[in-house]
Length: 155
Image 1 (tube, one colour):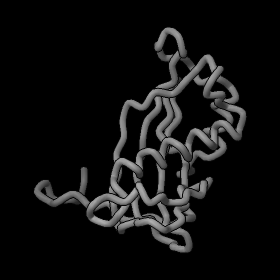
Image 2: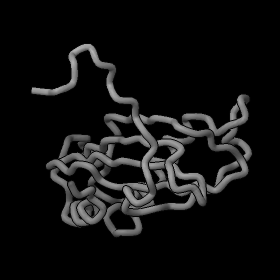
Image 3: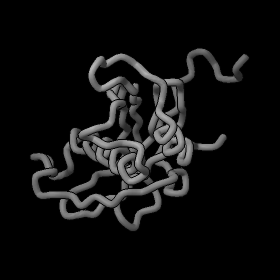
Image 4: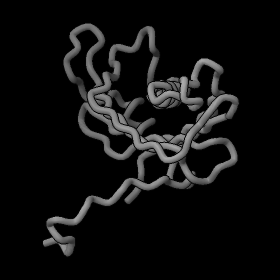
């Protein structure tokens, strides 16, 4: 039984520190990333999530975007924003794996302005890995399982 009262408000998401992430990719913001409000538009964050994870998998030999028989399809995504990011800033995208299933992986991502210790945004997405042609879930190939377990969050 929980000590939290039933009517208590849920805890607000908080920024995370760099040390919570296992791997980083540097991204340079572009002029076109800013929206009319003068900061990077929310849709750009999701492209950073996808690019950082896929670049990691490619570098690990776990994904060939043109020829792999197994590909990841996003089935869930979420992001919390804590501080604005704007052009011209460099951004470090931190990634880690929270959960590995038979055919799915939950990736967690932190967006950090270069030089900052606390995240400007944090999110996650879930890939279900499928056969490229049939689009049916398949077990994670060995190389992919090795790559994602190497950056899996402990605890």
